[in-house]
Length: 147
Figure (cartoon, rainbow, N blue to C red):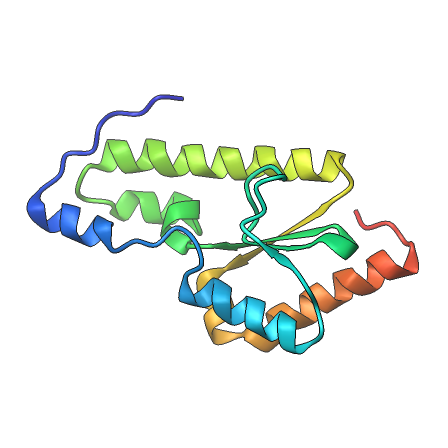
């Protein structure tokens, strides 16, 4: 899907230049917490669809830390509030949502478990995120299947 070009101003260009796509603070926080729990992982693993932020290869778990804006948290509500370049952002974010869903299907078909966490959830509830990951690791080591 090809979307329209973003109309930029010097202010928007400056703001966008500060957006980090890999190894941001929230991803690092989650990765370090997993390391302290004894897990070894790969970062931005390009061998899997979507290049997951953190991959527990031993357990076939692909972890994504998604930004609320870029990946469309509560998007039906939020898209109505967009003011600048609305058409561009709606197309861009819907494209991201579609790509995330497609990558999840590909990962599941390969026998992997895709887990998604919103960056604010990792930031504010790190222990809950780790607890959820540990539950999936437990399922993987028990041989049970997860739907």
